[in-house]
Length: 114
Ligand SMILES: Nc1ncnc2c1ncn2[C@@H]1O[C@H](COP(=O)(O)OP(=O)(O)OP(=O)(O)O)[C@@H](O)[C@H]1O
Image 1: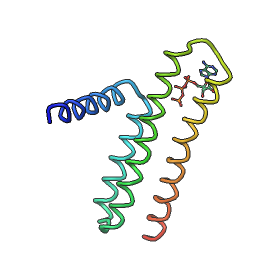
Image 2: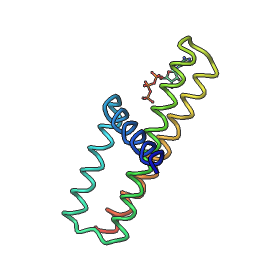
Image 3: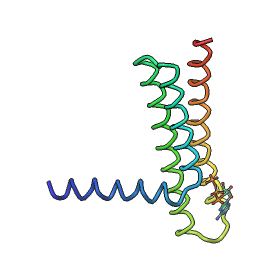
Image 4: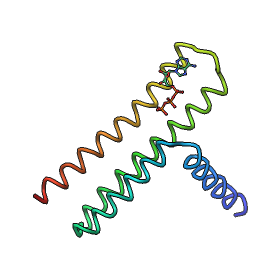
């Protein structure tokens, strides 16, 4: 049980590091707060809240993994390498996929309200 609690504490510390060192994380959290405010103003339904919560979690998780991969890549290979470029670009691509998907969901939600 102590081990489980420790793992949880490590994960919380990881989230704190992610927010502290990443500008993108702060921007994405601000966007999530904005969408939350919009949801309150527009009185989102239960399924609309589920959709926006999943999207926010999806983007933030992708960004956290991207940040972890960048940190690891910088540590393992500070010199420029084609393989590291690919790794970093693919990880950044994952964030872009999550962000574009979320924007499409947001656009669909807002369109359905017009
Ligand atoms: N060691 C390297 N070898 C080759 N290319 C690299 C290397 N480091 C970075 N790059 C290239 O520069 C880009 C930007 O890398 P950088 O580490 O600066 O990320 P970043 O600007 O913090 O990116 P993000 O905006 O995704 O957080 C990478 O996507 C990659 O194309």
